[in-house]
Length: 84
Image 1 (cartoon, helix red, strand yellow):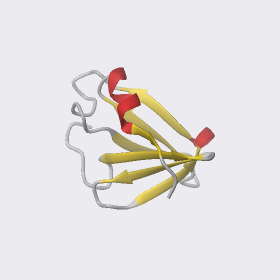
Image 2 (cartoon, rainbow, N blue to C red):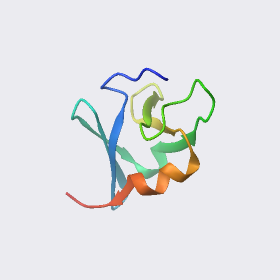
Image 3 (cartoon, one colour):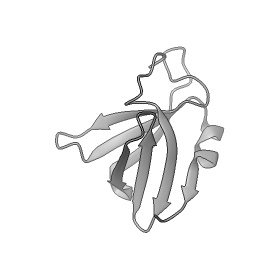
Image 4 (cartoon, rainbow, N blue to C red):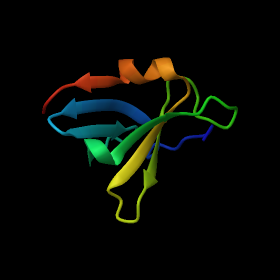
């Protein structure tokens, strides 16, 4: 995860209603229902760099994902309650 490509690097996470909108460095926005998106930390040397969370797909239909942060304190500042 140390070397993230543009598709995996998260730049913004917005929450509105019952869905998260995750924007990646390639400027694409992915929409996940709140129960289908997980937040985890990966503080090991193999985890994402600080301040550059990674989006990792899960589930066979592409409807689930995990956002991995370097440290727990990075999670809250990244989340914005904002409706389009």
